[in-house]
Length: 286
Image (cartoon, rainbow, N blue to C red; front, side, top):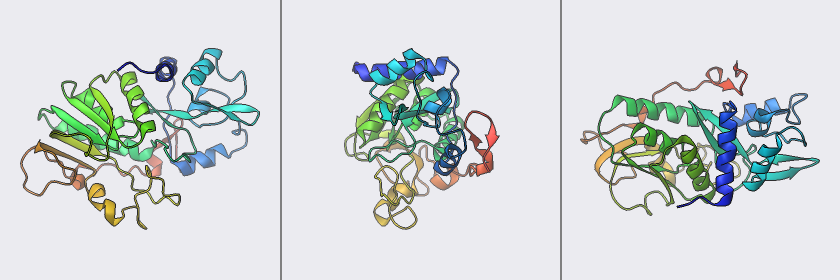
Protein backbone atom coordinates (compact mmCIF):
# COMPACT_ATOMS: atom_id res chain seq x y z
CA UNK A 1 0.00 0.00 0.00
CA UNK A 2 1.37 3.39 -1.04
CA UNK A 3 1.70 5.90 1.81
CA UNK A 4 -0.52 8.96 1.76
CA UNK A 5 0.97 12.35 0.95
CA UNK A 6 0.99 13.31 4.62
CA UNK A 7 2.62 10.03 5.67
CA UNK A 8 5.27 10.43 2.97
CA UNK A 9 6.00 13.92 4.28
CA UNK A 10 6.22 12.60 7.84
CA UNK A 11 8.70 9.95 6.69
CA UNK A 12 10.81 12.55 4.87
CA UNK A 13 10.75 14.74 7.99
CA UNK A 14 12.02 11.93 10.20
CA UNK A 15 14.65 10.86 7.65
CA UNK A 16 15.88 14.44 7.26
CA UNK A 17 16.28 14.86 11.01
CA UNK A 18 18.00 11.47 11.31
CA UNK A 19 20.42 12.25 8.49
CA UNK A 20 21.18 15.58 10.15
CA UNK A 21 22.37 13.81 13.30
CA UNK A 22 19.30 14.32 15.47
CA UNK A 23 19.21 12.25 18.68
CA UNK A 24 17.02 12.49 21.77
CA UNK A 25 16.47 10.14 24.72
CA UNK A 26 12.97 10.70 26.09
CA UNK A 27 12.78 11.00 29.90
CA UNK A 28 9.79 10.56 32.18
CA UNK A 29 6.89 13.05 31.89
CA UNK A 30 7.79 14.45 35.34
CA UNK A 31 11.34 15.18 34.22
CA UNK A 32 10.07 16.59 30.93
CA UNK A 33 7.82 19.01 32.79
CA UNK A 34 10.54 20.03 35.26
CA UNK A 35 13.12 20.73 32.53
CA UNK A 36 10.68 22.70 30.40
CA UNK A 37 9.79 24.90 33.39
CA UNK A 38 13.38 26.09 33.77
CA UNK A 39 14.22 29.67 32.87
CA UNK A 40 14.97 30.05 29.19
CA UNK A 41 13.19 26.87 28.15
CA UNK A 42 9.79 28.34 27.31
CA UNK A 43 10.64 28.58 23.60
CA UNK A 44 12.66 26.26 21.38
CA UNK A 45 16.10 27.24 20.15
CA UNK A 46 16.84 24.22 17.96
CA UNK A 47 15.52 20.96 16.50
CA UNK A 48 15.98 18.96 19.73
CA UNK A 49 13.89 21.52 21.59
CA UNK A 50 11.13 21.29 18.97
CA UNK A 51 11.05 17.55 18.31
CA UNK A 52 12.43 16.25 21.61
CA UNK A 53 11.31 18.62 24.35
CA UNK A 54 8.11 19.58 22.48
CA UNK A 55 8.67 23.30 23.00
CA UNK A 56 6.87 25.87 20.85
CA UNK A 57 9.01 27.63 18.28
CA UNK A 58 9.01 30.93 16.48
CA UNK A 59 9.79 31.61 12.84
CA UNK A 60 13.46 31.17 12.01
CA UNK A 61 14.21 28.39 14.52
CA UNK A 62 13.74 25.57 11.98
CA UNK A 63 14.99 25.47 8.43
CA UNK A 64 12.23 26.34 5.93
CA UNK A 65 12.29 22.85 4.40
CA UNK A 66 11.70 21.30 7.83
CA UNK A 67 8.73 23.58 8.48
CA UNK A 68 7.32 22.66 5.08
CA UNK A 69 7.54 18.94 5.87
CA UNK A 70 5.94 19.41 9.29
CA UNK A 71 3.08 21.29 7.67
CA UNK A 72 2.64 18.75 4.84
CA UNK A 73 2.63 15.93 7.37
CA UNK A 74 -0.27 17.57 9.20
CA UNK A 75 1.57 17.77 12.52
CA UNK A 76 2.00 21.55 12.82
CA UNK A 77 -0.20 23.48 15.26
CA UNK A 78 -0.43 27.09 16.38
CA UNK A 79 1.01 27.91 19.84
CA UNK A 80 0.41 31.51 20.79
CA UNK A 81 2.67 33.66 18.66
CA UNK A 82 4.51 30.62 17.35
CA UNK A 83 4.07 27.00 16.36
CA UNK A 84 4.52 23.55 17.83
CA UNK A 85 5.03 20.06 16.46
CA UNK A 86 2.41 17.46 17.32
CA UNK A 87 5.00 14.68 17.20
CA UNK A 88 8.28 13.93 18.91
CA UNK A 89 11.17 11.77 17.76
CA UNK A 90 13.06 9.54 20.18
CA UNK A 91 16.25 7.57 19.70
CA UNK A 92 16.29 3.83 20.29
CA UNK A 93 19.71 2.49 19.43
CA UNK A 94 20.48 3.79 15.95
CA UNK A 95 16.81 4.18 15.06
CA UNK A 96 14.37 7.04 15.53
CA UNK A 97 10.71 6.62 16.48
CA UNK A 98 7.94 9.15 15.99
CA UNK A 99 5.39 9.42 18.79
CA UNK A 100 3.05 11.98 20.30
CA UNK A 101 4.29 15.35 21.49
CA UNK A 102 4.43 16.27 25.17
CA UNK A 103 2.10 16.62 26.99
CA UNK A 104 0.28 13.50 25.84
CA UNK A 105 -3.20 14.79 26.60
CA UNK A 106 -5.00 13.59 23.46
CA UNK A 107 -7.33 10.61 23.69
CA UNK A 108 -5.35 8.87 20.92
CA UNK A 109 -1.87 9.82 22.20
CA UNK A 110 0.93 7.42 21.23
CA UNK A 111 3.32 6.93 24.14
CA UNK A 112 7.08 6.32 24.21
CA UNK A 113 9.37 6.70 27.20
CA UNK A 114 11.62 4.99 29.76
CA UNK A 115 9.36 1.92 29.93
CA UNK A 116 9.79 1.58 26.15
CA UNK A 117 13.55 1.40 26.58
CA UNK A 118 13.18 -1.33 29.23
CA UNK A 119 10.80 -3.25 26.98
CA UNK A 120 13.21 -2.95 24.05
CA UNK A 121 16.12 -4.12 26.21
CA UNK A 122 14.18 -7.19 27.32
CA UNK A 123 13.13 -7.96 23.76
CA UNK A 124 16.66 -7.57 22.41
CA UNK A 125 17.97 -9.95 25.09
CA UNK A 126 15.24 -12.48 24.31
CA UNK A 127 15.90 -12.45 20.57
CA UNK A 128 19.68 -12.62 20.99
CA UNK A 129 19.49 -15.59 23.37
CA UNK A 130 17.31 -17.76 21.12
CA UNK A 131 17.96 -19.16 17.67
CA UNK A 132 14.50 -20.68 17.21
CA UNK A 133 13.13 -19.54 13.82
CA UNK A 134 10.32 -17.00 13.90
CA UNK A 135 8.03 -17.25 10.90
CA UNK A 136 5.19 -15.10 12.23
CA UNK A 137 5.19 -12.68 15.14
CA UNK A 138 2.82 -10.08 16.54
CA UNK A 139 3.21 -7.01 18.75
CA UNK A 140 -0.09 -6.45 20.58
CA UNK A 141 -0.85 -2.80 21.32
CA UNK A 142 2.12 -1.79 19.22
CA UNK A 143 1.94 1.97 19.90
CA UNK A 144 4.78 3.61 17.99
CA UNK A 145 5.94 0.14 16.88
CA UNK A 146 9.31 -0.36 18.61
CA UNK A 147 8.58 -3.98 19.50
CA UNK A 148 7.48 -4.92 15.99
CA UNK A 149 10.40 -3.08 14.39
CA UNK A 150 12.99 -4.72 16.67
CA UNK A 151 11.62 -8.17 15.87
CA UNK A 152 11.48 -7.41 12.16
CA UNK A 153 15.09 -6.25 12.05
CA UNK A 154 16.31 -9.21 14.11
CA UNK A 155 14.24 -11.73 12.11
CA UNK A 156 14.00 -10.31 8.58
CA UNK A 157 12.55 -13.57 7.29
CA UNK A 158 9.53 -13.30 9.59
CA UNK A 159 6.15 -11.74 8.96
CA UNK A 160 5.70 -9.29 11.84
CA UNK A 161 2.25 -7.93 12.61
CA UNK A 162 1.87 -4.70 14.59
CA UNK A 163 -1.67 -4.47 15.93
CA UNK A 164 -3.45 -1.72 17.83
CA UNK A 165 -6.94 -0.26 18.18
CA UNK A 166 -5.50 3.24 17.78
CA UNK A 167 -5.30 4.49 14.18
CA UNK A 168 -2.84 7.21 15.21
CA UNK A 169 -0.51 4.51 16.56
CA UNK A 170 -0.79 2.46 13.38
CA UNK A 171 0.08 5.48 11.27
CA UNK A 172 3.22 6.15 13.28
CA UNK A 173 4.14 2.45 13.28
CA UNK A 174 4.00 2.34 9.49
CA UNK A 175 6.20 5.41 9.18
CA UNK A 176 8.62 4.21 11.87
CA UNK A 177 8.94 0.79 10.22
CA UNK A 178 9.67 2.40 6.86
CA UNK A 179 12.21 4.73 8.48
CA UNK A 180 14.00 1.76 10.07
CA UNK A 181 13.94 -0.28 6.86
CA UNK A 182 11.73 -2.94 8.45
CA UNK A 183 9.75 -3.87 5.35
CA UNK A 184 8.36 -7.04 6.93
CA UNK A 185 6.19 -5.12 9.43
CA UNK A 186 2.46 -5.13 8.69
CA UNK A 187 0.44 -2.67 10.78
CA UNK A 188 -3.25 -3.45 11.13
CA UNK A 189 -6.13 -2.60 13.45
CA UNK A 190 -7.06 -5.32 15.91
CA UNK A 191 -8.39 -5.55 19.45
CA UNK A 192 -5.79 -7.90 20.92
CA UNK A 193 -5.74 -10.83 18.46
CA UNK A 194 -9.39 -10.68 17.41
CA UNK A 195 -8.58 -9.21 13.99
CA UNK A 196 -5.54 -11.34 13.09
CA UNK A 197 -6.39 -15.03 12.62
CA UNK A 198 -3.75 -17.72 12.52
CA UNK A 199 -0.84 -18.86 14.62
CA UNK A 200 2.24 -17.06 15.88
CA UNK A 201 5.72 -18.15 16.89
CA UNK A 202 6.23 -15.05 19.00
CA UNK A 203 3.78 -12.72 20.76
CA UNK A 204 4.97 -9.59 22.55
CA UNK A 205 3.20 -6.71 24.25
CA UNK A 206 4.01 -3.66 26.31
CA UNK A 207 0.43 -2.94 27.43
CA UNK A 208 -0.91 0.09 29.33
CA UNK A 209 -0.28 -0.35 33.05
CA UNK A 210 -0.02 3.13 34.55
CA UNK A 211 -2.52 4.76 36.88
CA UNK A 212 -3.84 7.63 34.78
CA UNK A 213 -6.37 10.01 36.38
CA UNK A 214 -7.77 10.72 32.90
CA UNK A 215 -8.11 6.96 32.25
CA UNK A 216 -6.76 7.30 28.71
CA UNK A 217 -7.14 3.97 26.95
CA UNK A 218 -3.55 3.79 25.73
CA UNK A 219 -1.97 4.64 29.09
CA UNK A 220 -4.30 3.56 31.91
CA UNK A 221 -4.06 0.01 33.19
CA UNK A 222 -7.21 0.21 35.30
CA UNK A 223 -7.57 -0.29 39.02
CA UNK A 224 -5.73 1.50 41.83
CA UNK A 225 -2.36 0.00 40.88
CA UNK A 226 -2.66 0.14 37.10
CA UNK A 227 -3.66 -3.51 36.73
CA UNK A 228 -7.43 -3.80 36.91
CA UNK A 229 -9.05 -7.25 37.08
CA UNK A 230 -10.31 -7.05 33.50
CA UNK A 231 -6.79 -6.52 32.17
CA UNK A 232 -4.82 -8.67 34.61
CA UNK A 233 -4.38 -11.42 32.03
CA UNK A 234 -2.72 -9.07 29.57
CA UNK A 235 -0.53 -7.41 32.18
CA UNK A 236 0.72 -10.74 33.53
CA UNK A 237 2.41 -11.69 30.25
CA UNK A 238 4.27 -8.68 28.96
CA UNK A 239 6.50 -10.82 26.78
CA UNK A 240 6.32 -14.46 25.78
CA UNK A 241 6.76 -16.78 22.84
CA UNK A 242 4.68 -19.68 21.66
CA UNK A 243 4.96 -22.27 18.94
CA UNK A 244 2.13 -23.81 16.99
CA UNK A 245 -0.66 -22.01 18.86
CA UNK A 246 -2.44 -18.70 19.06
CA UNK A 247 -2.53 -17.27 22.56
CA UNK A 248 -3.04 -13.98 24.33
CA UNK A 249 -2.12 -15.15 27.82
CA UNK A 250 0.95 -16.60 29.53
CA UNK A 251 1.96 -20.13 28.71
CA UNK A 252 1.63 -22.80 31.42
CA UNK A 253 4.77 -24.01 33.10
CA UNK A 254 6.40 -26.89 31.30
CA UNK A 255 5.00 -25.94 27.88
CA UNK A 256 7.36 -26.73 25.05
CA UNK A 257 8.44 -24.33 22.35
CA UNK A 258 10.08 -20.95 22.49
CA UNK A 259 8.71 -19.83 25.81
CA UNK A 260 9.75 -16.72 27.66
CA UNK A 261 8.13 -16.12 31.02
CA UNK A 262 7.48 -12.46 31.69
CA UNK A 263 9.09 -12.48 35.14
CA UNK A 264 12.24 -14.15 33.92
CA UNK A 265 12.62 -12.28 30.63
CA UNK A 266 11.77 -8.87 32.02
CA UNK A 267 14.25 -9.13 34.87
CA UNK A 268 16.45 -6.43 33.34
CA UNK A 269 17.74 -3.19 34.74
CA UNK A 270 14.92 -1.44 36.53
CA UNK A 271 15.79 1.75 34.71
CA UNK A 272 16.35 3.76 37.88
CA UNK A 273 16.26 7.47 37.15
CA UNK A 274 20.02 7.67 37.53
CA UNK A 275 20.41 5.28 34.60
CA UNK A 276 18.32 7.18 32.07
CA UNK A 277 20.06 9.96 30.24
CA UNK A 278 18.25 13.23 29.84
CA UNK A 279 17.76 14.74 26.40
CA UNK A 280 20.81 14.95 24.18
CA UNK A 281 23.30 16.37 26.64
CA UNK A 282 24.25 13.18 28.45
CA UNK A 283 23.25 14.42 31.90
CA UNK A 284 21.78 11.84 34.20
CA UNK A 285 18.40 12.21 35.81
CA UNK A 286 18.22 12.87 39.54
